[in-house]
Image 1 (tube, helix red, strand yellow):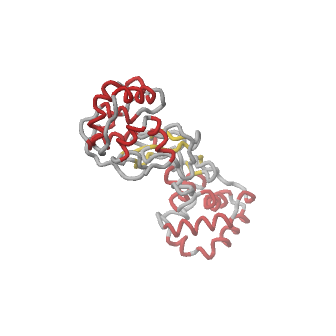
Image 2 (tube, helix red, strand yellow; image 1 turned 90 degrees about the horizontal axis):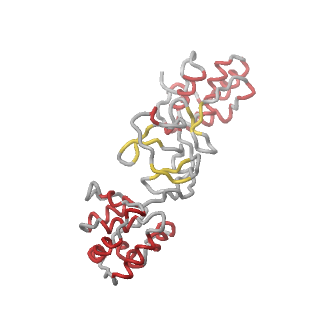
Image 3 (cartoon, rainbow, N blue to C red; image 1 turned 120 degrees about the horizontal axis):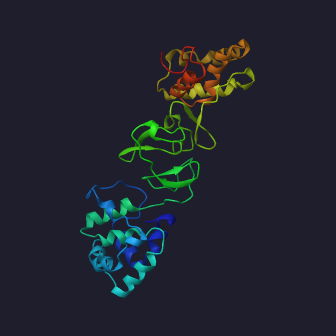
Length: 287
């Protein structure tokens, strides 16, 4: 039931506690919270807050939730004391605060943590669903909560996440592709680092890659969000129009076609043009 990354911390807490929680599904990486107890996360306790005597008093009742039978108290105290020396004695905190089976399951689900583990910002693994992979440090972090874009650092946008709003801290779509919508309008998603970077306005013909720009336009039109129907309908002339802009020597026209190769969807094309070619009609987003 457990994958290796999730089961290892639970095994470190002792075989008995592992068996007590397995039947509750507390180690699964998938599945949402059942919402049985709204404040169940109160059981997420740091090492100094773990009361092993109290936890062992309640372990028999907690173990019964999964049909397990608690062992002797001395073994429980020893296992709990050992777990309290590890970075995340979370399940013991949940047992310590045990009141009923539903709250135990919810607590263990909400308190699971991969915080501090190395992660891949391209796919956000192995961070859990209520954590984020920070692209700069490449570690799992708690979601930085926000109310507006100005609350976010690094050019990230304040985006819906885990029943609230958060600054994503990486701009991958989770499948290895850049997602400009996770950046503020002033930034784009860097394809290699998955960090939001300010638009790099292209002002010379030498910096324009028409093949890349027209390919990006095709992808943007396929996605469809906020695309200019005229620009999408005239994709056949994209390369010729781009080459004409390069040959014109006009910095604004060059900046406009340069925005195609920097953005990854029609909305971001428009955001780039608003920064780099503000005096031109927007060729990426609707008029």
